[in-house]
Image 1: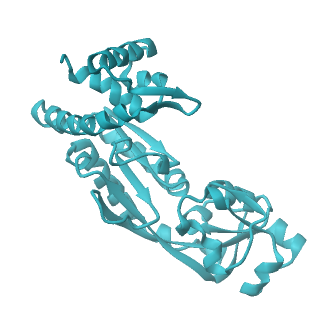
Image 2 (image 1 turned 90 degrees about the vertical axis):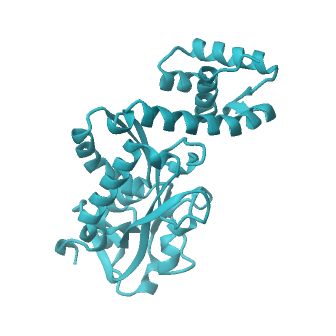
Length: 302
């Protein structure tokens, strides 16, 4: 059987992206080349590996079986090429980071350019919706979550605690009246998450403050919620490190807050790569240097 790793590279790329076009973009070839290589692999294995659907290229049962061995081969190949060829010391290539939209947009996006200034051959991809990507399948290199990961084949460390508080706008409060105590929230419009799109129950912050509240304005991202609150849509729970950058927000009931933590996760095989280790060290260092940003609010909001 004339099976070679180069064909497997194409298979792994399509299995990750579920698209010939996206796989071609990663491999820097045309999508027709991807299709040709997949056909060649299917011919060698005498099995169909993908089916086309509205959701993209989906693995068949044969493809699922091959994926297990493909991941093992990929881990071995990447480790060997990085260590033996010397690339391990060059810090070049792509690093993909998944983080909640608030942490990614309001923190990581503002400091990762400094990492690239140190290592200009490093290509960084920052993903704001990381729950659709898998560490185990190496679809993503580093994952930041708000929930401590369960035990399993993953290396995890806590990055930082952070606080969230209740915020509104002058326009909204002038039109609907102030908030003197927690129960007053029941008489106001609430901004929050869309329940059936809530990928992590630890994000349901408003229920921790006053159970039973129902949001009148909902969004799947905290960034959209924050801008809605600043525009006068109602009252929402916003992280301090985000709120401090938006002067239109008004901090209400400052004695009430929610405390959470950000956790960094990485596949132990990916952690062996120098570019991944360097990126982890950079994120940890930047987060620790900005501890007060995550836990306090500017005096202008008090």
